[in-house]
Image (cartoon, rainbow, N blue to C red; front, side, top):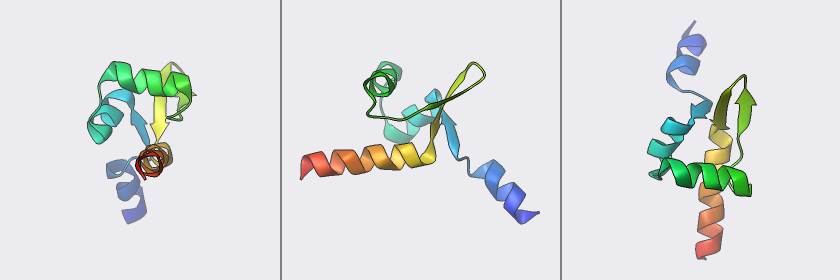
Length: 67
């Protein structure tokens, strides 16, 4: 049961608004990153969702580019 609660409170897929808060970027920047392929996303029905792993990969990409 605890694993079920963890998955609810610790999402693996983020809506665009949640990714905006995580990355502290504007909505238009998030969509541009998805369009350019720098930030992966998936589609479920009409919703565009960003996997937690894609956010981590994008941050790692920024760190590599800064080095």
